[in-house]
Length: 88
Image (cartoon, rainbow, N blue to C red; front, side, top):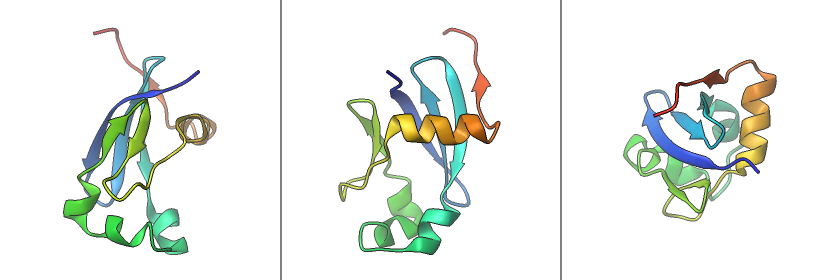
């Protein structure tokens, strides 16, 4: 089971994530924003996007929008966008 341990909002509506297996990567939200929808609209504001937090291993925003950590991991893995970090 892969969970997200940490998130950090970056410029350009990108989200840095660290996973429970020690990998980390950056997810660009351009495709999600292009699709639109009522849950996504608040995230377009940089200050609101920066409110991302981890709840029970899942990246989440105050309006209830969240990301499946396994799907997020596989997407980054398949794109070659994961990096293994040293143990802390």
